[in-house]
Image 1: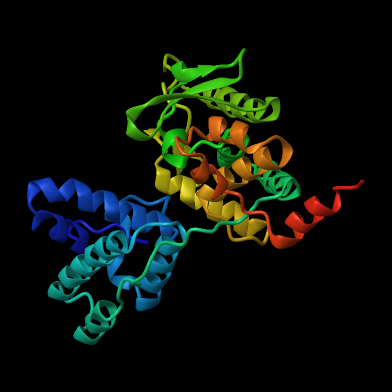
Image 2: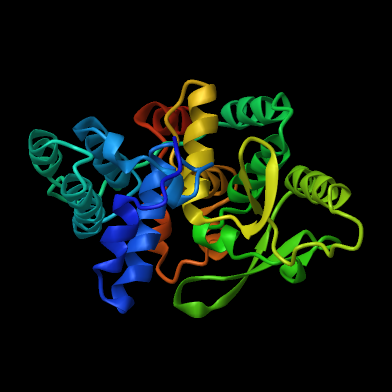
Length: 304
């Protein structure tokens, strides 16, 4: 996509109140990441080339990721606002604008049930990352390792700093819901993936540059490691991209669901509750996404 000095995005944002500009830029950045434009700055995207199918796919992705209908409406309205400006600039026809405006945010409730990612699938995803010669390969493997290995939320992973990691104890101090500090643990293999990424990042620092304080960087234009912290929308993109590469549709929260399910399966509900940091044990139980066949096999093992 080409860069434009005066584009509909810029005009749309300037028409908003200052208090709304940051929010809508955040929303549009997320929308762009979900549509596959993660490697581009917002101003570089040819928004006027978007089609109704793009907005339909965006709404579906938001719903699958568990976002509320009101949030989907916010995204749709933001894209409409940009397209309105594209029409004012004569970049699109009125017919194109009307078709874009005809797409509605899907009503209804969030999707609650997720996918249980088996160990074999995680290994396949890590193999795909290992085969990627770009920096993304090492970074994405580390992200997957922490999400699946510790059960942390994607918002917790993007906010992690180096100072919050204890490599000797394999522990991570994260800021969870309610601004509470929580201690997470991850297995050896997950920390090995993290250390491989951090070592690679340090090796590519220019002379005199200090290492970043955070764990994961945004990577643009193929292999350029920026000095910017990764966003939770990029985590969504990583999960979807690596899932697609192994033939499975994956959402970031599936890693947490699978972690909790595995702890319940191999230990018990009480330990899973503690590791998930759930106040109510019923919340932990709702994360159990084993299917009927798995439950049946569990009963079959009750021999006399």
